[in-house]
Amino acid sequence: MRLFALRGANSVEENDAEAILTSTDALMRELMERNQLAAEEMVSCLFTVTNDLDAEFPAVAARRMGINRVPLMCAREIPVPGSLPRVIRVLVHYYADDEHESRHVYLGAARALRTDLESAQ
View 1 (cartoon, rainbow, N blue to C red):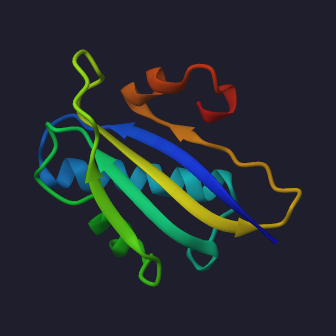
View 2: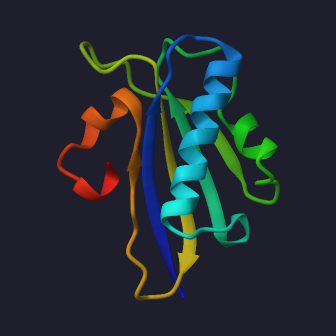
């Protein structure tokens, strides 16, 4: 077994609690599905949001999915002028077999953040 890290991001249509939860849920489900990842294999998750998202914590969506025994943290992204607005990002640490290949996930408008990662789209 080895420690791996996954990256992912999703855009949010508006600064609304339900919109943040829905986008986070979709992101986490896609990350877990593409990587055949169970909550029990996760070590930690760090969520970040852009400055224009403050209606809800993304970690609430993870807890609602049953990710209850994993340390979760939420933080703000650096507000770089011209950066993509209304984005939730996540960094997930997890254990897997040495042969595992991490499949990062970028959804919605956030796909523009990593066009260099074909496997992330």
